[in-house]
Length: 440
Image 1 (cartoon, rainbow, N blue to C red):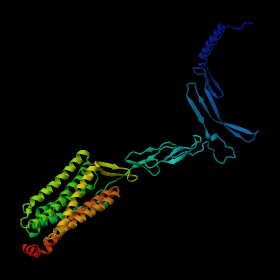
Image 2 (cartoon, helix red, strand yellow; image 1 turned 60 degrees about the vertical axis):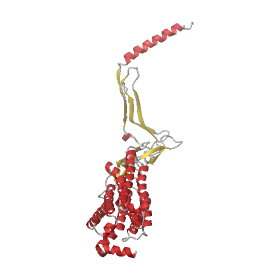
Image 3 (cartoon, rainbow, N blue to C red; image 1 turned 90 degrees about the vertical axis):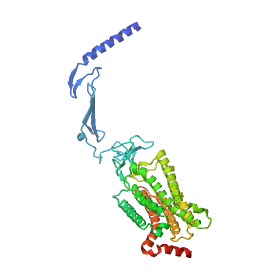
Image 4 (cartoon, rainbow, N blue to C red; image 1 turned 45 degrees about the horizontal axis):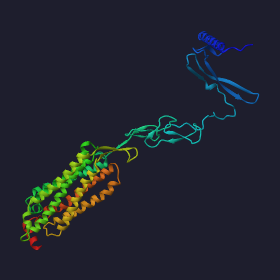
């Protein structure tokens, strides 16, 4: 019997393909019913897939039963259908609870899944989300960070608004500080009124009347300047806080320095043939005040041009809080302003220490020396207190330092003079000055 040739094989395959195409054409229109439901073939001639879900109960080798509890099928249109009834499931009497097919419980919201090393993918640990992050669904693998102005709740399953903190006027601390500032402002205004009323008396004239007015006005502005640190930070308040503080304190300390230098010049000018006679008068003290203030104004202007302060939010210092504060912008500019004021204070203290032993009818040099000592002590104590506090307490420390140092200047320099004006009027006479000068 001869074997079929290659040409015959190709002819047979082509005939079979034609038969398959013709068969698929007729089968795609065939519909019939079975005990399982309607049957139909798709365009490729494939029957619909159908799988029964069976619940087997095995009691012994010869005793078992099963129940159909659902099915899964793909119809002729390619749609998947899943039918299941858990009420038809019957468990073996030996099972005390429904068995689970996973080795780890589901992670609730607030936790994230961490896969266990060298274990199946269904084995994992549930780790709480860190502060500031949440998961709002079960079995999430990554925690979602909260927005900057929000924080995670205790359950780590929702973001809540952060607590906003700043030194407000409504707070007890802000109310106390603002009340103290207002009180000292009124007190300083009263002292200025007294000096204006008694401007022609020997005591006021002898202690450089113009510089006393300037110093009292600058102290009034110092007390008002502290109010800029209280309240919600804004662009305007952030620009004015440190610059106004630096310039006003420069005027106040320069006035103290001018009063001290005036005392030294006045004493030196009393010696016969002294060259200091040409410097006697208000011209030197005015030029010194103007020069020192212009230097500070120049430093503040360069600071504002290079990197001006601006409102900022601190979300890292305290957990769950949003601290509203002023960012100083240029750290170099901030420390230059503060450092220049400190330099003037140190210079005033040195000059006042030299002049305190000079014969002075009203001992103003001694009062200035003590006021500079109080001023330096306040700001030296301010540095560690400022660096160790956060939030509104840090601002409160700075406000307290401004109020305390300003009150120290007011009390040490002007309260003794008011004491003489009201309680020792006999010492505020030209005759008393001459008698005391002869004794010294």
